[in-house]
Length: 75
Image (tube, rainbow, N blue to C red; front, side, top):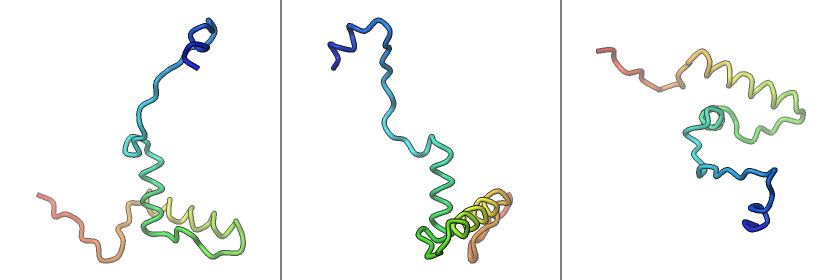
């Protein structure tokens, strides 16, 4: 493959970094959603799953803390 790619003047290959979820903002969103909202909701309709996901995203956007979570005391 490398030899073939080297022969192609129209093709440029770029090395991609290893998987780094901490550098991809959507991975942090999904991680937060899976911790709080049901990861595998037993809803019968896709609209119900979408509603649950949207509620989770709104929770994250408003920075609501989960029950029992204590916020750091300001210094």
